[in-house]
Length: 515
Image (cartoon, rainbow, N blue to C red; front, side, top):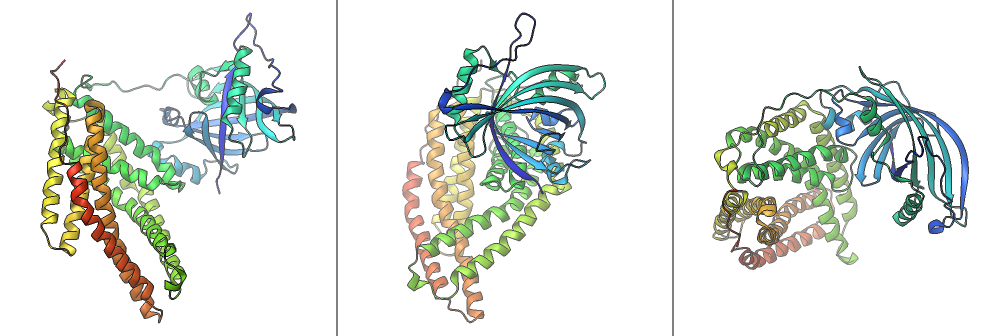
């Protein structure tokens, strides 16, 4: 079973002096509460790093290694979190890449093979930076590294670097800032490479051959350049969120689902820029993926909503085993939803979708409008989506309250989301007016979303009430919550005209002449 450690560290290197490498460090005692520097001895480490032949992990700043030596021998997968922050996911030592780590790399590796690409032999001299009470604040190591490339034509290289990593449970970036200032003053500079393996590959391994690029990218400032940049960013987000979803990180499923939605919306909103006949098959597969992810996400939202509703009731209105019945429903639903999410991400259909998305964006089927100035084309697309929202709202509000109106308001919610995504995508070209419109459309979307969540919650409450009644329990509390949800939906419908009015006049700038 893999476990995870959060690394917060900075890397430094000694610049050459008079043709020789320097290895002395300044005295760090007194720096930001460091009372003592305690030497821990020298450890010999042997790590083989794995990647695809075309170095996909390196391109994504992911590192996978099999390391012996030290007190953490085993397989390590490092995933970037922020600048200087990585999660190290560990698995026991074995001959082959552990399945748990291979799964986290599936969206990158796909049908490729992970092979050894470089070997690092490190002699690590470790010191602890201690506070007055002898509590470790950070670990400082001086690594003398010998890197051996393992591919055809590879060479070897050596260097010395310094790592300063905060101790477990310590999150004081000010400490790292102070240590960095002290090292800089001594002429020791931040490393030019984000990781050892990145430097090793750069210095020992020939760059993988690249297929000749026969595509012509649209000129800067055009609608094509703008839309493609947006689509590629969302594609990258989709791929990057795959391991986070597998690790069950907070909000990961929601964010991955949003990436699918933004891609689908952009294909529709900007069909004047990128040919819809080519994007439609990919959009349909993104819809499938969103639906699979939605089972888990919608279950999370509903469970949290019902828990909050129950927590707000006085104990005198909780009749029967309300908490237990909701917990049984939630646990069973979560297990099935999780199984469905992982089945989708582990399936061949998912890999085919990623490949199709890559192929589409590598050679995009652009239409004539792609060569026009971005502001001209994007403004018209946003206005078109805005009018679509208005029509759906008019249709919904003309209906009598009931299931048909609920469905129509849900359709309007989808239109509000698409219009908001279109405005957000256009904001780099249209500026503050598009940002303001997106904010107001989000308010419309939120009101409609709260209404839809109430509809979904009422359906669940009816089921819970029926189950309670069949088990001989009181259904009073479930009926009470049902009434609360009805009242919530009515309030949201009452709010809708006001938020709609504030978003009813999109004042977007007119485009400029083509450069």
